[in-house]
Image (cartoon, rainbow, N blue to C red):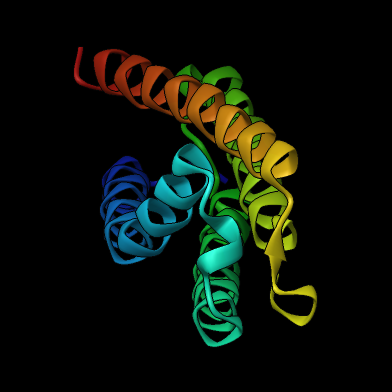
Length: 144
């Protein structure tokens, strides 16, 4: 069965938009923890605040997982199958990095594992670059 090009492009576009929306929603929580780590004030984050961050990171990561499931379920047009597989791998790694960030915030111990948080942020940054490359490459291949 041949992939529906219009459907595929629309779905990828929807995934990109939804990924950005989720990221924007989680960014204030990220910034709060990032600032606390950078300023050495993690111990001043309340258990309630850490719980709120942990829960919101968890919800966002679950949403990303749903988008990953959509990516895995898409039938890519023949000319972008390779780059689609690369996108799928990068998005899988991105979701894993997000989960690592969720796990770095520990409300029950009222702390943040700063090293794990930093590693998760680095992993997300690297995979975001790969995802962006894949989207650009797909766009150029499909719009020829």
